[in-house]
Amino acid sequence: DPAAAKEAALAQVDAGADVLFAERFGVIEAAVENDLLAFGNMSDQYELGPDHVLTGPVWNMRPTVEYVIQQVKAGSYTAQDLKDFSMMAKGGASLADYHGMDSKIPKDILDLVAQREKEIKEGLFRVNITESAPAGSQ
Image 1 (cartoon, rainbow, N blue to C red):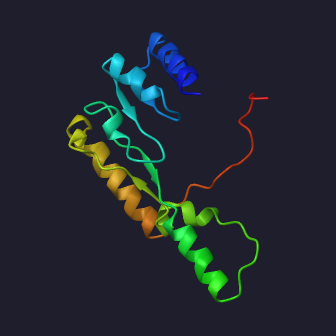
Image 2: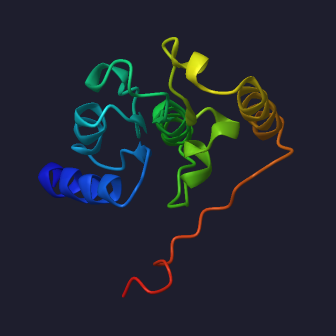
């Protein structure tokens, strides 16, 4: 619900937030209206808020789809957990282009991000997915 997401983002702004994460549509609109920075989600969302969206995670389904097609063609596909194909190490995730917004991020932070991305792609670092509900959310 984009309207509810925007409302929640505005409440965060009222509480002092100065950077927003657009987990849903509506949040970037709140960032633009309040001249704040935001991170997009799932796709490159820079065009929703030029000069406001720094970057954000991008989901690429291609590795998953290619793997499943290969398995089906080989006659060896079985039901399985495919989440690893959505991870950066297998090309299923990346950061959106900075579109020049990297100038708003300290160089030492950009260097840390680049180093972590390299470690992930080399299999040296992994963030495991926890699918349980967050504590206190029920």
